[in-house]
Image (cartoon, rainbow, N blue to C red; front, side, top):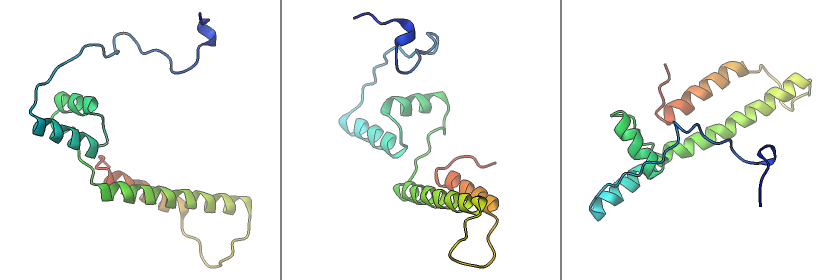
Length: 124
């Protein structure tokens, strides 16, 4: 079956100069291989991207503890709730509770900062 270029679906092909097509072999003992797989999983990467990042620049791999990933997910949900609250306020919908409203932009900024810190990202 032939495809017309304009009817093709999916991701656009990578630039040939950026396409990874060279295979590297690494010999490791079973315990070393398990360690590399475990560290790649903890870093949230594939083994290939983990080793490429480790080879490109030392210290590029940051292991993110599972508790940080859970906290990140919870903070994402909180961010979604803040967005809903902001939408209701902007639409003029009366909220069931009274009192002063916090500055939602400040809360959103602090939320983003905490999420970045949980993942070990540079927050400067």
